[in-house]
Amino acid sequence: MMYPHPIIAKEGWLYLVVIGVFAFVVHRYAGFFWSWPLWLFFIFTLQFFRDPQRIAPLGKDLFYRQPMVVLWWLRKPMTPMPIGKP
Image 1: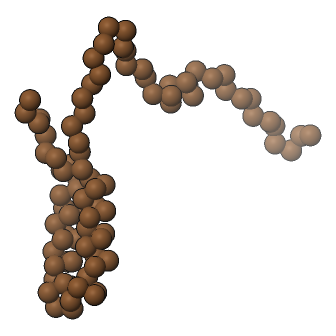
Image 2: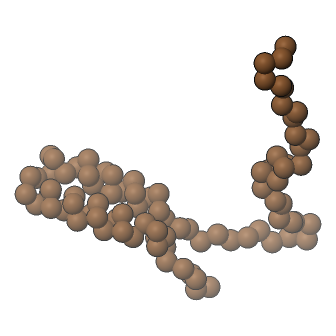
Image 3: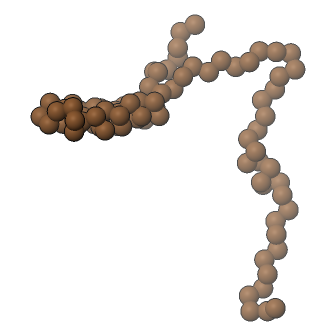
């Protein structure tokens, strides 16, 4: 099965390029001692924007459920208390 989209989300490409170039420049001119926090931040950003393949479970009685946010809209709204009256 071919992976239909990039492994790294497109929204994170710019962040990775900027952080990677900045970490490389600091590493080149100031050394590893000053650049290791930037490389660590680069790895964190890479992990944050990764987009792994999702495989839907297969089965006879499986279904997809709407998010729990829908239940918030189904609640009866609370009536506000009047201002200035006890």
